[in-house]
Length: 221
Length: 412
Ligand SMILES: Nc1ncnc2c1ncn2[C@@H]1O[C@H](COP(=O)(O)OP(=O)(O)OP(=O)(O)O)[C@@H](O)[C@H]1O
Ligand SMILES: [Mg+2]
Image (cartoon, rainbow over all chains, first blue to last red; front, side, top):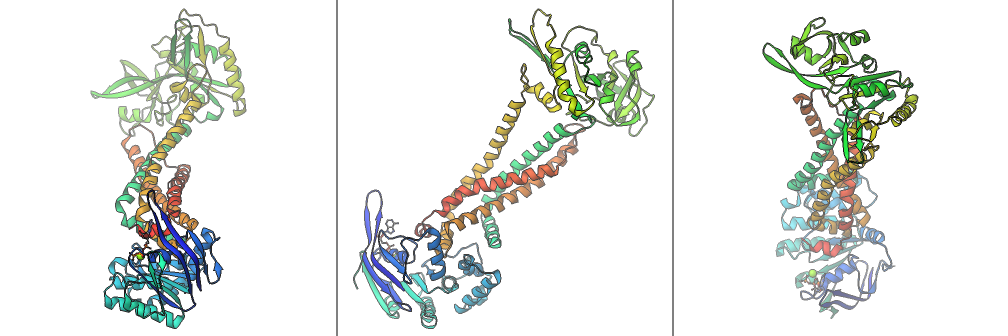
């Protein structure tokens, strides 16, 4: 499903040069739930962003669903993200000016859908995360756990084959975190969604199929 | 899609109240000034009462004399003698109306002072200028030749002197100890119609300035009316030929400039005319520069405010990109947002303009001038708004859309 070959990422500033990722090779199977762990600053987010086509590697290549992505234009990359990928961030990244339902509909705006279809799909996604009674709320009126559930609904509304989650439970207490984790596990089990999740929590990582450890930009396990 | 842009635009405008206020204020204020100005220029340039034959008329409003040796220049209206001799003898015009600029004077009614601006005219003047007579008719050539003490007065003067809705025909108006018999009452003319405005019109033969004086400069202007609009160029050429033949016999001056101009050119010549240059090119250039600079102010302001918004909305940009918006789509979104903002400003501006125009009309700052907001002006404003929206939206949107997704998401 996802295939990384010899990925390197170098950040250059005026004075220093950071090797954030060093020769990463990774294969993620369809339907797999993979977790990434490692100390802070080891390159977990960088890796996830590169898998998600949000950032370009300095070297190496990425195939998504057997499709090489190296030569795609801005528009083609945007389309690929829209069709195949769903993102969940540690700090939710909801649009505060929009109601819950409009936030969830967002990925569908960049597809050929009618307003009615969008509404139906978004309502269904919110039902799945157990938030169908909050559609008219604004993000600021929700708890952290509820916000993350909205973010999950947004990530799954377009039925992507892959979900990329960067510390989705990082800002939540363990009870809330477990709820979120249960939703992700259910998505993986029932819909066969491939999930790559960055986490600091060994208990969460334990529940996934496979664990990848990073240290200083290199894969150690 | 558009509906969603609209939704977010309104949400953003509501959240950023101060920004919205500043932007809307800038746009609507600029528009208001531009629209009132346009209405004004439109009125001055296009209103036809009582000058209904403008398309076949030319105007001699200024005489310039120059002395090359000593550097003297004198500029102003012409003498009756000059206009009568050189314009009055032309073949192409069917009528030559000659009238003085208005003079200030006052009359007293029950010890109350009334300001009266009076104006001397010849008889032909009344055949060119089609005043609406509420009572009576103009004075005749015979009356002019006899120097009869007769007057045509304006409606305002009649009201001030005789009272509201009183008849004045055959009654007398006393100005500067001279009694004039009223032979006609006409609908008011705004002062912006400078060659036609007056509170009281008298035969030129009554003028204190000796109309037989051979001086070239004086206080008169002329309107030349051709048989048809197609004769106008010929008329201008004929006058130019006549003027070129004049021998200047003066110890101070050796050159003379006088032109038969179209209405608006004549107007501009008074302010900007120098020698043979009417100043009309300078006028349009100046107007263009003024309008562009004036429009730039709110546009630059908007560009600035929009750029400051980049950081604030970078998270949104990151999210949209992550979920499949291309840079192009985002540019489109932000431009649409901005156009919504500017159109909103435009609507408010139109509202303000209506108020401002109503205020100008009601306050009578300029007597007898009724400004109206016409559809052409409205159309211009709409175009101006769209121009604003595009100008101030495209560049910031382009910059925003080029933000790297990860950087955009990190900034909070
Ligand atoms: N835009 C950037 N410019 C320069 N260096 C960067 C940039 N982004 C990340 N880095 C560096 O790359 C390395 C990896 O960063 P990354 O954010 O991937 O770490 P992480 O494993 O996600 O850490 P955390 O667990 O704290 O989120 C760090 O050393 C970081 O300083
Ligand atoms: Mg991280």
